[in-house]
Image (tube, rainbow, N blue to C red; front, side, top):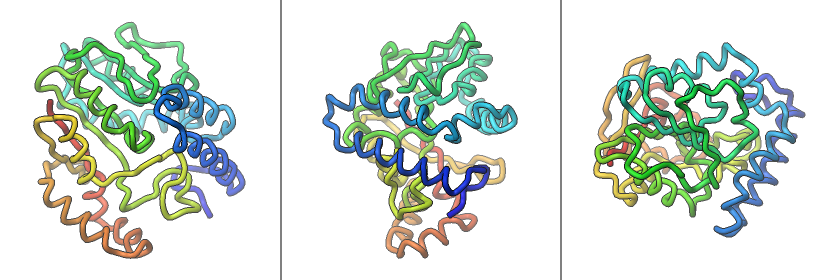
Length: 279
C-alpha cells in the first residue's frame, strides 16, 4: 500500500484515515433522508478533526499546491465568466478558487457542508459563504450565471444526488450553465478506499460514469448536456455517444484490466470530462 502521487503520508496514516472515513461514511449511507440533512456537516467536521493529516487540510497549508490547483481550474472557468457574472461553487473546500474567481465577477456564492475546511479570515467582500445541509443550495432562484462543482457529486448520498442537481438548476438563470467534474467510477475507486477496496467505501458514497451523470442532469430538466475533454492544455467538445461507447467497453472488463486500461492515454482523457449542463 502506498499513497497516491502528491500524498506523502505513511501507510499507518492512510489506514487510520481509511478506518475513520469508512466508519463515518457508513453513518451517512445508513441514515434516513431527514437524518442526512444535518449529518453531512457533522461527519465532515468530525473527519477533519480526527484526521489532521487529511490532504485537504495539508494542501490548505501548502501555498504552491493551492496555487497549482486553482490555476488549473481558472484556466477552464475563465471562458465562461464575465465581470457582471454571479458564480456559484458547490463544495468549495478551502474556498481559494472562489476567492480568485471573485476578482473576475460581481458576486460569488460558496456553498459547503463543513465549517472546518472553509475556515478563513481573508474572505473578499463579494464572496458569500453559505453552510448547506448537503442537498439544498440556499441562494436566490434564477440568480446564478455559472455554477461549478469539482469532486462533489461522488460525496452525495445517491438518494440526494438528483435533488441537489435540481436545486442547482433552480439557482441558475435561464441559459445559465453548470460545470461538473467528478471522478469516473470505471477508473475508481478514487477516495481513500482505493488503497484497500475495488469499489468506493469511504466518503465517495457513489461514483458515476459520465453516462449516468448525463441521465441525472436530464432528469433535473437541463435543456442541454455536453462534455468537454481536456488534453494537454487544450479543451475539446466530445459527443456523449463517444463517451458512452468507451464506458460501455470498459464496464465489461474485469476490474484489474479496467484499472490498467483506464490509465492509458487517451482513454484517461475520456474518463475525465467536464460535464456542462445548460438550463
